[in-house]
Length: 330
Ligand code: NAD
Ligand code: UDP
Image (cartoon, rainbow, N blue to C red):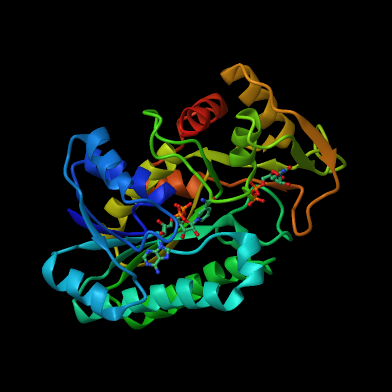
């Protein structure tokens, strides 16, 4: 199948491009390189030994998308393109709403014009808010998001539900990612944030590499076994394979499905640090500081639906995640 990946030179998109190509699909990427590098296209070719098409373009521009969908025979769209820095979204909310929602609407309108109905969306566990018990199931009520980035995901999910309700030909899979980490085992296609990382794993990597002096562990007094926050870390290669399964489901069905992509297990901040140190033979200096505003104590997925609906489950271990994150440090 020929698949259009928006944001396909980014972290999750590029790993998904590899998984799709390895599963025998054809991949076309559109990306404006706002948070990625064109070199990634070559990395994908080298890893898979297959060709991948790349269009440099902004998905908020209807003419860009119309031109691609007119000429490229894509049967499905996997929509990664979005701005994702939580802190920046608080400082520049309008830029986040404009890019993330305009991009989505532009894609959907152009798909409608060209009779393309299969759509996979990158959502996030952040939409659950902090009020639900773990493990989080897809039917739990969505919460109140702590920042504009999270709201763009919740709003996008609603837009997609409404669009699918109005068009019975549409098939939409809303994938709620938990905490993606790791990178391709080749040492390419890792997460390389610009500036100071927001997320734990890139901060651990940069601290181990000596780029940051010390990691702050946000809170040591949570009601968890070691007092630090617990999350569902999932290897990006598992996540990528989840997209291949979601695509196969999407083209065979109609309507909207929401699916958690996680391992179903929780690990604490200290467990992640100590596993990283052991697996890679490095040291990660840290200090326990105050809790970070907006953080919940624990968050992990119920993954029953992903198994039942998509036939997918995460295979890679926390050790694999730590090893491949370090390999991909660049
Ligand atoms: P990323 O920043 O590495 O990739 C996103 C890509 O989209 C980038 O290459 C960027 O250049 C591109 N892009 C942004 N706006 C664009 C536009 N207007 N036109 C064309 N390209 C545009 O991010 P990622 O970590 O790969 O995340 C992919 C998706 O998954 C995003 O939607 C993100 O919100 C979502 N998500 C990510 C995480 C995570 O922890 N990484 C968790 C949950 C959800
Ligand atoms: N965290 C931390 N120090 C950091 C970054 C994150 O202690 O520098 C903790 C955070 O409090 C949470 C976990 O690591 O318990 C995962 O945070 P991240 O920002 O990676 O993902 P989130 O689940 O918050 O989206």
